[in-house]
Length: 203
Image 1 (cartoon, rainbow, N blue to C red):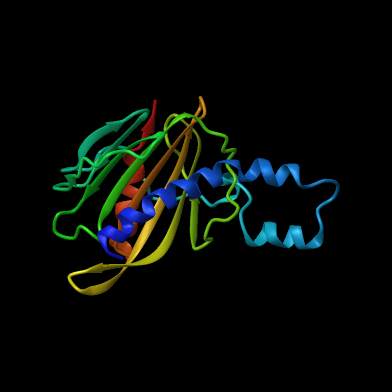
Image 2: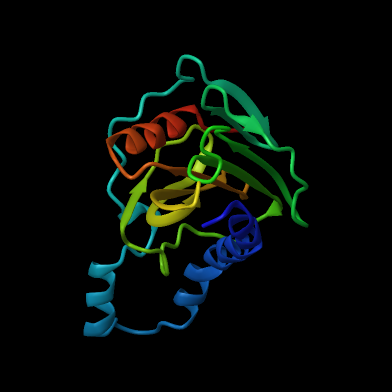
């Protein structure tokens, strides 16, 4: 995926995040009486809420050596050493920042989006990929989970496999935050996801 293609998908990702916000409410409204056998099977196959996800183990709170602390709206986080802030404009209704590794700007990317105003997300996890989903313990968060999916990026004329981690957070007051990290699909990438999670806190 080129950087241009990824930028074009940003409104789609934000739209998907907004869809996630209201999914649990819609599902609850359409269900009455005892759940069917099919519904019970779907519940087993796909976590219904963040609470149903396994915890992401191995997270250490704090800013890793060399990382730079940053703030966007209600979120404090940190950026890996040497990554550049692109200073892009925010989509309507959001605060937004994008950071990239200058050496690999298509395959190592950090994007942070803070929804302006209160969200309706209730922790629903329907419609997520199911590849790797974990609940998170983030200071100040009433709801916190990460979905890690496999993707490919185009860089230097070659397709490169990546992991795209989408971290969904909501404050105690109901404000929604989306943190996205594109990294390598290996132990180093998982370590980077853990390090990023350890830097997160909500006001």
